[in-house]
Length: 341
Image 1 (cartoon, rainbow, N blue to C red):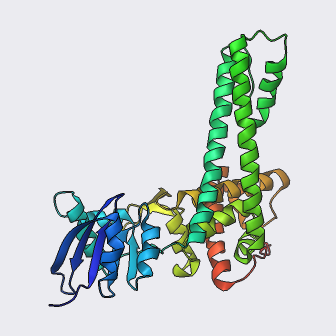
Image 2: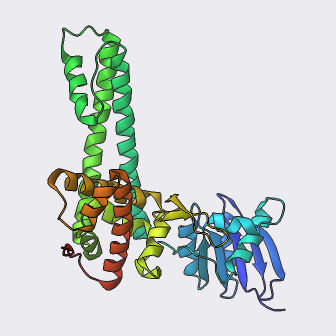
């Protein structure tokens, strides 16, 4: 009997569905195994292709299975869905994973290292704490507004609420003062934790040669550079800078037919963390150029003269992504272009 050519695994928390197929596409086996039995079963199989969806725990299993001598391929779940036949169940999903992985034009996800995932966890933990701090500050401002204490939006203006809380002239009930203190203590604690994570991210970025290369680009700082290294695959895997920009969702969405090209807004179909940070960094560059003036004849000056600021920021983020690809693939440092007279 011909040996198994590919095994598709539908990942789960406890019960994993496996589908084995031979090189001609015929079914070799269908199995459902508990989590603990999967490594033992795969170690008994001859080296073959193991395919999985790039979902929760996929990178962990990719590393573990790769150590057993198998070739691991991860695919975005959205690319696997068209190969599911009729009913949706674990067995059909595992079979669809096998089918999708054998397509010559399929796009795969690189298996991340433990260091990359640890860096990504640090970034996302900081992002979560920032959101919680914003939520707490908004809640505090909203509660105080019900008692006539008004403060402008923005984290910096929580000091006004703290001053009102400590002012004996302010007519606030005792319960409101107590709960307001709880929320202010929560904001202070989150501030300290965020500062500590930022110190670690900054130290790691300045110690890394590739991160320093990325930070030479105007608008890219330690946080954005760390996010690119943590969440993006090796930039050498992209054929050109536009491919990396498209992976981030910074290129226009196409709706073309009959030879007529129609381009719309950016697709937003890629890695949203890096895309958001690039746009924020680009907006900082745009605001600085508006305030201080962009170099005469530069691309940014020409764009600002005829386009809205937000559109320019998104276009600049696209440009920054392409520059990042060029610098990382050529191992160079960013140099400011000479403005055209």
